[in-house]
Image (cartoon, rainbow, N blue to C red; front, side):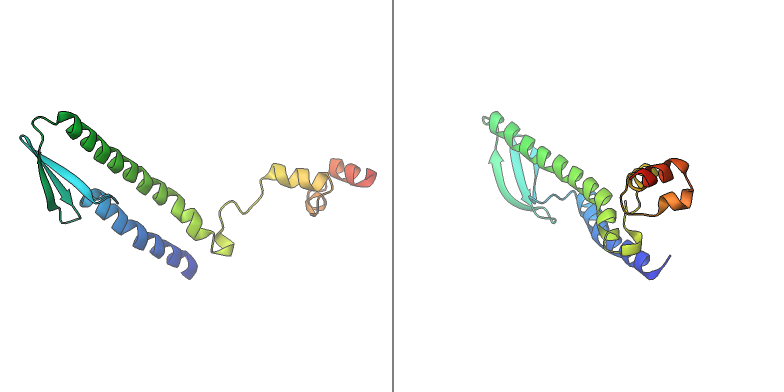
Length: 140
């Protein structure tokens, strides 16, 4: 591996490692809100250190409790999905800045043959010595 590839891999690790540790190790999400349910009391926590923000008696407010817990669960699930998408797409974005390592840089063989046989600029017909390419070139 060359220095550029190692650099891109290093940047990827520097970005993804904290995201994964915070998301799955510390159970963190960008809203910074989590909760604990202790009997009839809902304890709302905030931040990585899980500092207590409020205590709410939910004995007669079950509908509000369900809405709150659902909202936090949806936020956690969406953030987990976002971390996976970032993890999958970030290498493509990082390698796009390295010219000789750009993803999807090469054309497929079908694109090359179509481009060359139908008059688009390239010299692949001469490389393949294809009669069909030469006949198309000669008739044009």
